[in-house]
Length: 335
Image 1 (spheres, rainbow, N blue to C red):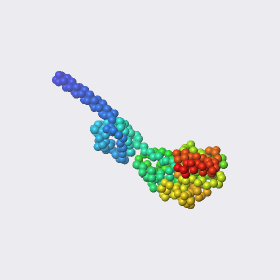
Image 2: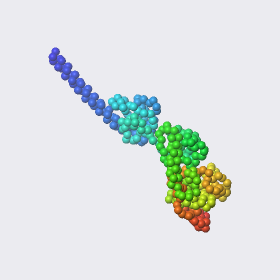
Image 3: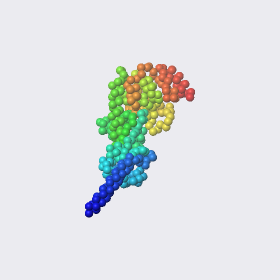
Image 4: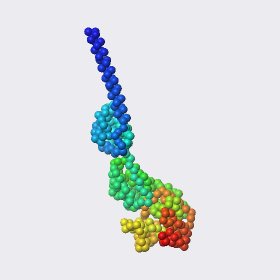
């Protein structure tokens, strides 16, 4: 009997040792699986909808052949329960990313970040087309006017009041998040420029400075010339001269503009044609950059009244009409 007990005990210890060894091997194997790379050779989007269970996530990863053995993933989640607390959202799977890294990303809610660049010198109409084409965002019609109203501006005149910059969002965001950020940044930049404005500037309000900056933006081919272009327009205003700038004509033409301006277009009476109206246009004609806002506020200390394009993005500046006509003949009429 004693020998039987000894034999049984020895057998039990052997089995326990084997089980323990197998358990350790299994645990190590599962942990190593978590450190293995997903089968992704290029970035892939992964949408985890609200209410998705961990088991459903595993099925999705298997179906997309990102993991070969889904059961190992489920065992990993049992060994590390914190990895199963995934959050809904829109994620991106990167090449070289491990199984555990993906789960940690889903647990922390590190969603894919989208970006959109609203370009300076463009109009609200052009920006609206860009925003409407964005992926994974809730678009709202007439969003610029809606944001104006939300910000207490009931003018119904959104042009130029939003700052051109790169903005970021995550899937499911409302488009008003981006547009509101753009509006608020323009208010900050405009206030800063207005506070720095030169003495005796013939502009009566921040809004007039915004209008001037938008015209400068559209005339700018070379960034360093902004203060000089600003000086020309400011000098003309001070002398009671019309601005006579082509971008205002183009804006007033709207969809009729097809790439060329005729003499008839220059003579046409529109609220924006600065060949026909005195002073500034009634509204901005585009979204000015911060540099154009500062140029409008602090024009160069020069007495130029005219400029003409050299056709390479730069301009020739002149003090007199005689000098200007000479430059026009050289760079425009004799092309």
